Amino acid sequence: MDQFIQRFILYMRAERNASAHTVRAYQHDLQEFAAFLKTKYPKLSMERNHRLVIRDYLSYLHEKGIQRATILRAIAVLRAFYKFLVEENVTAQTPFVGLPMPKREKRLPRFVAEEDMKRLLELAAESKHKWALRDAALLELLYSSGLRIQELCQLNAEDIDLWSNMIRIFGKGNKERMVPVGETALARIRAYLATRPPKGPRGSPLFLNPNGMRLSDRGARLVVARWVVKAALRQNISPHSFRHSFATHLLSRGCDLKTVQELLGHRNLVTTQTYTHVTAEHLQKVYQKAHPRA
Image (cartoon, rainbow, N blue to C red; front, side):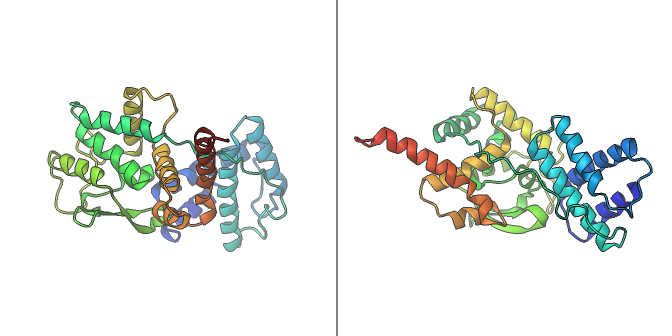
């Protein structure tokens, strides 16, 4: 099994051009599956149909109390893996044909209210902390452009056009898109760049850690967590909550769904439509509060 996993990971990197984050997630899920097989099916042949094995594995994950979203991700990884094995003529058929799958839970995205977001951003901007300029630029950019945390950390200084107010993003599958940046975010970025140590003419990471290296995903998450605590916000707010807030606030103020899809870099409009439920909920609250006969 291990050799097939390595071949699949190589395929994901070389032919599918998967991001490092995606490759890590796939490798982790496949190693978990391989560990299960070694324990329960040590002599399993790859040529056999693994339909019952997959069912057993999904039951095993469910019994462990794994969240449904995590199980669905594991299924997606295994689907891709077995599809690769079929294409490589290792096995004759994917075990997922006709196999009943758990349905995805419909959860509304968690977002931050506009007044709370304003308080958090202004708190960082007014701070005298050593890293306040970097943190204020990072938080403003997350909210201003709706970036994923991986997209933000991969940014180089030259990806931001300070004259056209646009930023070049490399999203999932290394897909490139251009996203506008707000004036406030640009002002914070200019202030940060004026004090940031120079890193060279090209390939210079936008956000640096205290060691002068590119800020990692984990480091950026810690930045967000620190300012959420300082702002005393009651919600459990993650970097992705900034992205949810970006989309929700745009739709609440009348932006069309197709534009929001383009800004977020969603491949499918259905993914973006999740935010319409949040907006409808917001409109209902406004209606109940404002209409005299509500």
